[in-house]
Length: 387
Image (cartoon, rainbow, N blue to C red):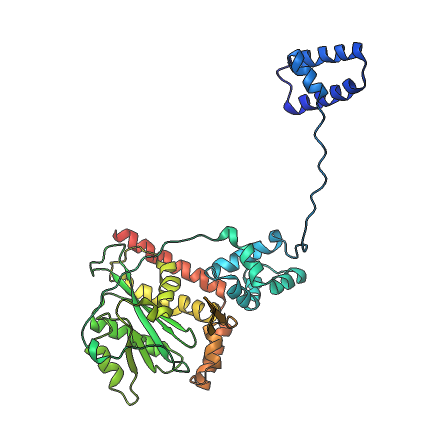
């Protein structure tokens, strides 16, 4: 037996002997058996079974059923992947909504696209985008922590639902950047979202003291493109205190201050969702306990990160909810950016809309993404150096 014979060669030799064995007479068959035993190392009975065996049938080409594929992942993914990551990994429907504005920025920042590829990217459906991006998705665990307050709680009404129309109604919450140790010696993140436009603002807090929280709430109000009309929070003492209440109520046009029910996070579902998408996805669960990092975090949140989230990342708004038997059917409107909703809001002045349009024309989402990463790396390097 030739031990250096490859498996492929053994199959070819056996196939040739098998064809000759099928047509040979008794005398020649004995010679073919001798060759099979000598070349392939078979026992004589095994050689007889191998030469008598029928070769496996040749498989016909696979028939692809259903509608032919319109979009090739190999062509679309090299363009979709950097856009999807720069847009903070949106779902398919939000990705489809942002592509018309992000593709020109991609061509300006990366490379020119041929007309067929550009047309395919603009025509691809949200469901197809979800299927194309399945290999890139990962699941992450979520955690959170808060502490209720009691000051002024009884005098502040509980909000049962957002029935108010127009922009200016904010939900706010705080997120602990504590690294798993809630000892109040770490940085907190103040998170706020407007219910009607989804315009968001984030600010870092050196602590959750009443003065520190009020200063950042005032800065958030100054950054809003519309007047503040209502503020809704959980039962935390950083919001339910005399400083915040006086600031909201002692003005010519008082701002409504409301709170959610205790231990009912769904009452603040809008801002709770942003705690994950706008805070945890950027800062994770690491510990930030350096007071000098607070201005760096605020510079990041106010300029590049805030501009990317408000100007270039579309969101969905619930349009209708109805009960069909045992199912609750939710119908969402087309995905829009907070910037687009602000331009359509009647509460925003014409001068502010012109200012936002001028700013939007100067922004590039990929440049904002690089600036966000540069500032995050500087903040992380400072955090690790302190640790």
